[in-house]
Image (cartoon, rainbow, N blue to C red; front, side):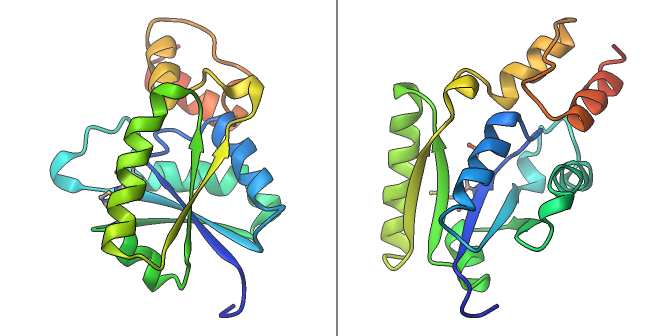
Length: 164
Ligand code: PNS
């Protein structure tokens, strides 16, 4: 695997949405392998789903691409994790202008920490432009329907969490 072109796609994925799924599939047109890396910070964790639940949901979604898509979690700096994984590329999705400042800051900081690591931005697919994990959770918690915005297994888990 040392010669493979591996991209790291980091995030919270709490939970994974169809926007993330679309981005992973498009990234696979360019890279051999993508590691979906859930960043964890036990001291500041306000996630709805545990890391294990998030890993399981991602693995279910990409079961047919298991050789090319790997789900993992990490603590500490993303740049160190990418180095451990022998990857030189971080993938991030960009939805709208509002994402830009946050993403720009992170890309610059990561570049300062490890200049040999590049951040590549992928535009989110048009049908997922307004989808975010945060909004999806809010809508389900208030009784709204998010089918089509998240994979079916995630939809079921969200309904269980909020007893809908
Ligand atoms: O999905 P998110 O919450 O927008 O993802 C943010 C994430 C996980 C990519 C970012 O918080 C991160 O990289 N965390 C790992 C710790 C780290 O390296 N922090 C410095 C970032 S410049």
